[in-house]
Image 1 (tube, rainbow, N blue to C red):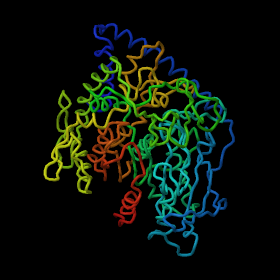
Image 2: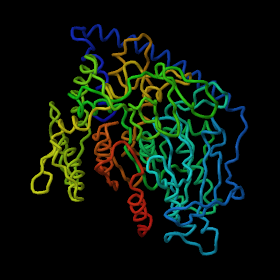
Image 3: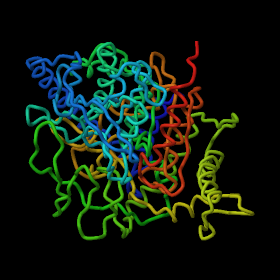
Image 4: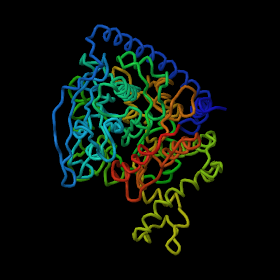
Length: 578
């Protein structure tokens, strides 16, 4: 059975054989499934009609030129470690000819000033060889803002990745990207639902390639993406789907350049990816930990929107919550603030899961082994990675080894880990990891299901929503357990096109040859198994993968910029293979 067949079968099995409440007959479950399937079909037709109207409106709009204007720039200088970093800034360049949202489909390009001087070099790069750093500002599947160079990053307090990249001789191309709350230039249509964000990221790559002879500097065969959280998922999706024809219609609709969209390398911090299986993985790890730390307030209608941008706030219950560029803070002192932009709100005090959520946790955990076993994963030594029905097995041992390596790095650096009961340490060496005790130590962030909520309240439900902003499910498990009438499912095409795993190894797709994936040792926004599956799948298909779980890090990114650009330099400066 191939992966697509397995997923569809698993969705059907989970929907029909695991009723929400003990005692509900399979026949009743079938009736419920039929009803939701009918409503899903109706919603799909309505969404198709809305997209058709949108397409007609686009045909009437003014087209933007795809030719880069090298004369429209400002000269600027920032400081990094007491040294000047001079560059030219080409701001707010529309990168498609028929944007759904001009503000959300523009990018700024920053080029080191040295490349405008005769024979100028930076870090051994010339204007012809300089790699192109392509960061995205997406978080929580919200619109991604342009990642301007900055000496005062919100998370690190120091220089951000864009400024460090410039100091290392990289050209920085920073696109704005549509997200789940983006409203089109018509002021009413939501134009950033799946798969819009990956379509935009691809369009930005295509723009750069289309202008490779007009750009003053930059090697368009050395494009490197970077993102954190949902932005990490987006970076992974860009790396895995190069030149796939499955996005052709959407790229044509926005007037993307007719160019390649594959990239050289993908840098992915804590990617919130593989969403159609992330609920299973989460419960495999956190089942039995019944207190969740994510705010339970549901998202209600948005405050007044401004076309082309994300709203400044949403209403969560009776509280107005800012969205940001910074973290969500509700002001009562209970909210954890060191979180990526637009990540789920975390509270220091936990909330007990309901009985229904605990039942869901048990059921989702039980589904995960079959999924893992369908993938045929192997470690670097060629050993098959599997799970038993109880969740133990060689795949679990592999996950343990990732955490063990992380803890060992901390021990080697002189940290005292003797208080951690989930680690077995002998003579300064980590000998074993207890995953159940790890989960209790890390704590659970999200109640079950973690992503596809029964009440459609998650950001991911919103991401898979319709152009009139109606959220949708993306797993059969949640769809058949939604207690409200009229719940619908996102289309299989949209679910598929948001998951990089469906493209790795696919004929006609150019996967990035180089990958760097990080998931903090105390990150529980998703389960470590999710990026591990991505890394293993890439590795098993022959791609270069650097994957680890840094000690002391939670859900965060760009915390090791020196190491990140050392890694990139090692790739970009390596002799080209003939």
